[in-house]
Image: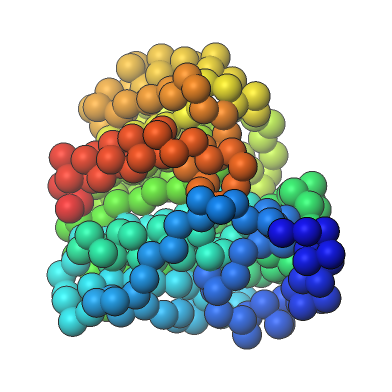
Length: 291
């Protein structure tokens, strides 16, 4: 895509405010900050699926949630899919459809809905300061609770709940595993492990690594400069000293990959490691009672 093509997209995307964002179907486009998308971008069709958007009442707002599941099926294994900082854009919706094709009810809540639309901002720095910094952890955890509650009333199996997340969502996956005792398995993709804390972000994965409710599979890139392998080793040591679920967890480092190696719509995509990681994730959910 040429620069002229990129420029032509800006007037359509950038002006959306929070009200406009809530009127736009989640998962229907890519975030402005990730354009242009890569040629390898995967698109999963909806044949045989029930897909759509539901608006959930959470404190102060109606939160959009994208869902996908096999049409006409109930008592489904359920996966919460937590987005990167870009929100529930097309890639995250596609991951939900990939799970649905395998027999899951998959749901991606738009956890940034109160702060605004991360998809309309042109840089990662803007998203971090204007959206992510205004989305506290406790709010996120309770919003995921609301998503789980809706899922269980709409075809999900409360005894087979899993969670997975990417980058920002990878960190949230760790936190939710330690928060909700009903989670059976978790898969965190390159989520930050250590970092600064404050009132809105009081704990990081390293702080709760020994207190997980379910076995967690963490997947990281050996060339990820933002999440050094040393921090992965810190987490591995903390897991080994923790409870039974923590001890049953596993952290995998893909030495030839950097950050966001699963993101097929970005230049960071590493096909071999993305496919290997996806296979590991599916096996993890099967082995720990979600599938």
